[in-house]
Length: 318
Ligand code: NAP
Image 1 (cartoon, rainbow, N blue to C red):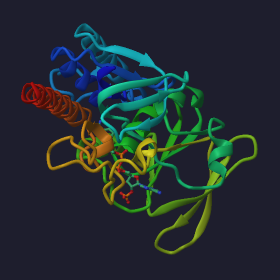
Image 2: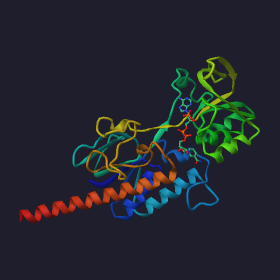
Image 3: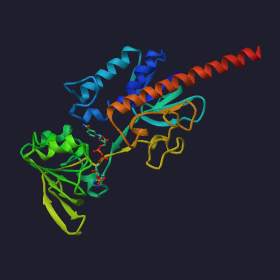
Image 4: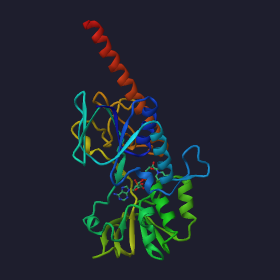
């Protein structure tokens, strides 16, 4: 049985692994079989991670974090967790290969998943002109007219990045002010290829085999209009990935995993949570990394206290 299993391979998971590894806990980190590295794998340049004044590409940062975690004895398993039993003293983690892994503690750092528009055409057109990842799919839209939905940092980042390929990028936002930070807003406003479509909601995605446009509803007048497009990128935020722990771990009203105060302690002893899965507010690579640190320290203290209690019980019995 392991002392610690970390589920998730974003900044929270790997930072927890660095700390747990340095505490000689020989962590096993379960990275997804297909999406290893978390959200930063779909990002271009990360400009705000301390210590990289020239910026660093998201995938490079994740590769460095993995090397650092492995340097201190972390074992990385590329598989998907399919079910969890976190209730007992021995935590059971079943992975896609069919194997059930056991540990005294689990750090749950599964991050968040792209939010969908909730339209019926989304499933059918996904990968056919409809995408959630500019860095993955931008290349396919050379000299095309495309749109990005959203008004946050992600939407600004995606739209700006996509102007490298597309001839025109609309940003469709449901209000007339952006949620994005000033620097990201300004970068988008100053880009000649970007045009903002304010107060507009996508109510339908057009296209049989591939996206050919969208139907927009004016959020003030209710008026409908069509906008012809070759591609559509959705960047409207993320939802915490908690489906594996429903019914076991308490959630907050925002849908994140509930933790005690500033700690990473969940409602179950020996189970800790870190990163975007507990954070409805900040959701930065550096806050996720810090949260991974907290989880590793909490797990280390839990294990030490348990060992001490067992030792005292044994001494008493003798
Ligand atoms: P976000 O800040 O939550 O913004 C989501 C945007 O999508 C909002 O403008 C929201 O509109 C809109 N939206 C949400 N649901 C929608 C729906 N169903 N239909 C249409 N529009 C919808 O999410 P984010 O942009 O992904 O950013 C998340 C976090 O990551 C933030 O803290 C951000 O700062 C950070 N981030 C940072 C960077 C960077 O620093 N380089 C890059 C990317 C992300 P309303 O504004 O009307 O709510």
